Length: 98
Image 1: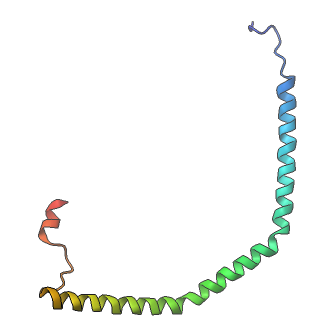
Image 2: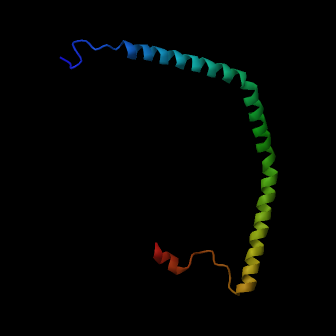
């Protein structure tokens, strides 16, 4: 036997659940309508993104070439100012730290 009596009244919870399900259905219907209405905007955005993406490779190639030139200039400056060659491998001390 429960402390609340022999039968628990759940009519309030049931009514709230029904109201909640109706709100959820209305929200889903609104979202579907808005999604359908905004299809042309999404298509325009996708087309623009593809156009920008297709236009980037030539610029990226130029940026890569510029980066290589910058690295070469930095290495030349390093060799000129330090008198030491550029070492690509870590020094022996770094191997002992790991």
